[in-house]
Amino acid sequence: MPEFDVVGVGLNATDTLLIVPHFPAYAGKVPFQEEVVCPGGQVASALVACARLGLRTKYIGTVGDDERGRIQMESLRGAGIDVEHVQLRGNCANQSAYIVIDRSTGERTVLWRREDGLRIDPEQILPEQIACGRLLHIDGHDTPAVARAAAIARSLGIPVTVDVDTVYHGFDRVLPYVDYLVASSEFPTAWTGQNDPFKALELMQREYGMKVAAMTLGAHGALARENGEFFYSPAFVVNCVDTTGAGDVFHGAFCYAVLQEMPMRDALEFSNAMAALNCTALGARGGIRGLEEIRSLMARGERRVDLEFAARAAAIAGK
Image (cartoon, rainbow, N blue to C red; front, side, top):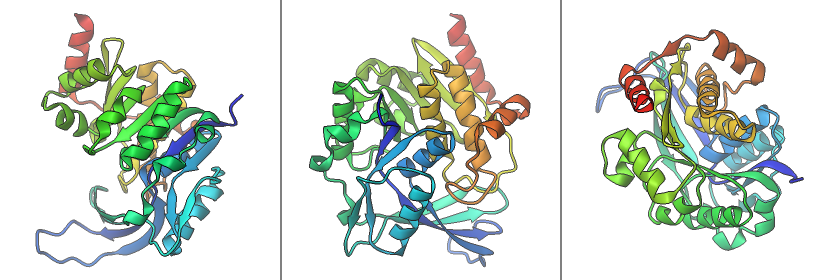
C-alpha cells in the first residue's frame, strides 16, 4: 500500500493580509484595520486541507531560508504533512504575497513575488517521490517540474489532479498527463480561445483526454464535465470574511473526493462546502474545517444558484 494518499508538487507562499474597511479607489488612500501574517500557496494549502480530512500527505517544493520560509515549514509540519523532500534555498526569500482584503465583502486583491531561486528543478523530482502516493496534485507554475511529476505518475497509473489559474508557457506538456483538471473560470476560455465555458471545457477534455474537466466559479460554485455530461454545483452562502485560499481548499477537498470515489455531483458539492467554510475566517487556511462541519453545511446550508449555468447544464443533460 502506498505510504501517502496525496503527494503535492507546487507552490507555497507566506501571506501578509491587510484588512481595509473598503477597497480604495484608484490612487486613493485608506487606513488598514489589521495586519496578519499567515501561510498559504496553492498546493501547500490544498495539502493542509487534505490533512485536515485525515489523508496522509507529502509536499514537494522549495522554501526560502527567511522568516517567511520558517512560518511556512512550521505550518506544514504542524498539519502533519511530510516535508522530507522540501528543499531549503539559502539566501533566498520565500514566496510572499500582500493581500488586501475588503472587509465589507471579503474579496481580496493579491500582490505577489517569487524569487527565481525558488524554482523547482525537474531533475530533482524522482520516481520514488511520486510512487509513494495514491494521487498526485500539482499546479502550473514550475511547468517543467510538474510535467515531470505528472509523467511519472501517469507511467505508474497514479491519477493526477491539477490546479491552474493562468496560462503558463509549456503547459501543453502537462495537460496530456492530467486526469482531473480543475481550473479557474478564466483558464479554459483563455487556453482554448472559446468564450463559452461549456464549450471550452468540452474542447479541453476532447483534446487532452482527461477524465474530468472542471472550473471553479467563485461565488457561483463549480462546473465539471465527465463522461459527456455537465455537472453544475451552486456555491454555499456563508458569512464571507476572506476569500483567500478558497480555491486551494476546494482542490484539497476535491482530492479527497476523488480518493473516496464520490460521484461527481457529490464531489463538487463537498468541495464547494469546504471552500465556503474557509471563507468564514482570515487567511488561506484560516477556515479549514473537518468532515463534520462540511457535512453539516451540505445538509443545511443555503445555496447561491447561477440560473444560467444551472439551466444550461440541465438542458445538456436532457438532450
